Image (tube, rainbow, N blue to C red; front, top):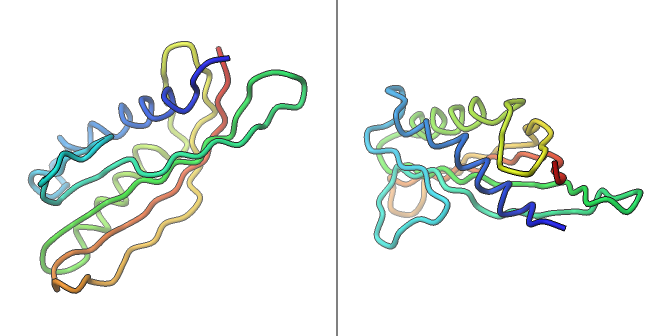
Length: 136
């Protein structure tokens, strides 16, 4: 029995980290597993991780669902949508890896982009993926 959730988080983080260097992203976009206090947008962060047993024969097989949060502050929602598209491109049907774990390629499940928040500048997006994981 191994910790598939930690491995999944690490693998997703590694797949998302190159977004920071993408020239199409808003300047200063940061990708985080844990967002440091007082960090300002644009931010892409790994949100909730859930695991459901997919074990039919006594083996450790889990279906992992991961939420990715994108946060943009500025005029217009277009930069948020570009961030969300970059997240989808980085994960949807792409190979992810962590030592000792075999992953199915993540499958895009859904996305939602908020209306502008009360401050008149902040937009939040959610992108959800699902994949199976098991010890390699």
